[in-house]
Image 1: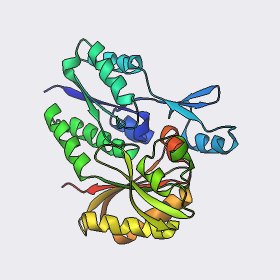
Image 2: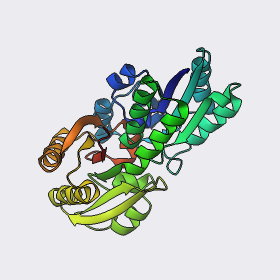
Image 3: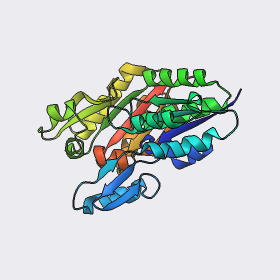
Length: 285
């Protein structure tokens, strides 16, 4: 059985040590502050991004990788003997990143050894799929087995998040239903998720952050009960809010594995600072 290499893009928000540990290749998206261009998680890190954001004269914009950016990685990996590639990317409903990867596949001579997957998710909703795929590949699983695991995880995972302000989702045009429902409501905290189509949608609305966090506990209880879960907590330049959210979740759940990550510059451009998120799934024995 050959080797499997896993590729993702920078919106997966996987901490660099994990990427290195499992040999995960990452293609960066770009963040533009006026005429300045940065490569997400390469030439600008989350801490630098959230420091720069308040002083920017206008909201930053983002852009997807080109097919050539993906093709460079795919060609490099396809030269490794007896190697297949699984490439998992940002929801196609949010970005053209997945389409760029598909176009690159058509240009690759060994495209039969490459599977491109639409995560239908964002941030660590992608990251979780990518890391678990890389773990399974390292354990000797076949391509069909890894793809089956990715699909199972996508079905089993639950994502809930709160934004510090709706301004960024609205101005980026990425919030859809939630913006229409809650954009003008003062001090209403929409509880958001990423639905089965890979779009941001609203689950509930609660007045105030603490009540919203408590409501997420209720939602996760309904999803998982007392079963052991693997949990990732992410924050966008808001370590105190992230720590508070994490403490609350640890009080109420049987957490087998707990991971922390930062919401990176590209996702942070659209979600905004102050965002906190929970990515949870059943712990598989």
